[in-house]
Image 1 (spheres, helix red, strand yellow):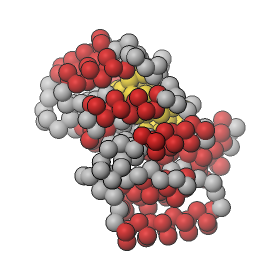
Image 2 (cartoon, rainbow, N blue to C red; image 1 turned 45 degrees about the horizontal axis):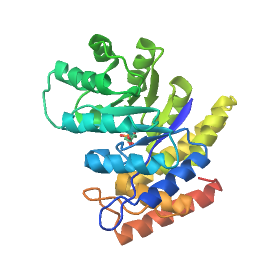
Image 3 (cartoon, rainbow, N blue to C red; image 1 turned 30 degrees about the horizontal axis):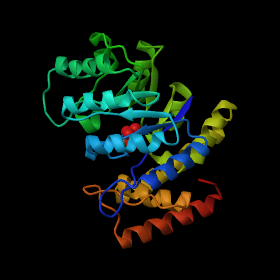
Image 4 (cartoon, rainbow, N blue to C red; image 1 turned 180 degrees about the vertical axis):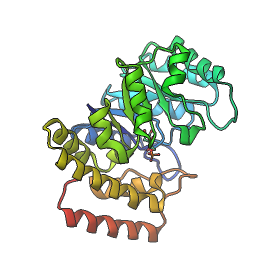
Length: 289
Ligand code: ELE
């Protein structure tokens, strides 16, 4: 049962990656009990990072840990293979990729060929990052079983937990995670774990929820899930990906810089409003985030 964080990418005002802030944040999350870091995911603004920035992020984190799943997805397969090759020099736990996106009506065989090419070039275990809402394609358990692909695992970002569980029943040996914060409790109970964006700002809540489940205290674990879901609702009012930078600074006590447009930082008034809302929320609960 694992709690994996799709780590946010701290940016400097000039839009470059703030490497020290990334290291500080990653170190803090691992110290607080997060099991693995999913690098260059959606929360990390992976699709908006160049391949060189993806490499820079891996070099940065590799200074402090190998508990990394390195996301390599790009819309240029040559760049993907360059990232796959680059990762072979690092002791990561695996690499992952979302499917090709934006282009409509791609034949299923092209999607399979994309992943087959990655698997055939990778020296690390390969994970599928399935996110139909974001990519427009559902690499489902059925498709995967038709493809003959041998994958180490799947991160299925899907509000339909049964869709994720179908991977588990079809491929019992494969690691299966769900990537939705609002389903984290159920992912920890019924899958191999959760990949949760809100673990950036609420690592202790996720770790405590996992501990409560392992101790059989499901009532306590569900209370943690309700707190997490409340924070997701707050964040979504402002744009979750941007709000997460403010939430992390509030709860973790250090700056993680700003997001990079087109994921815009919150404006002054929004930040003030969110800070007030969250501080009241946390004060009312007396919990450590
Ligand atoms: C989820 C996203 C979206 C987490 C990543 C993740 O950021 O790479 O349920 O759409 O809000 O994919 O946070 O989750 P939803 O794995």
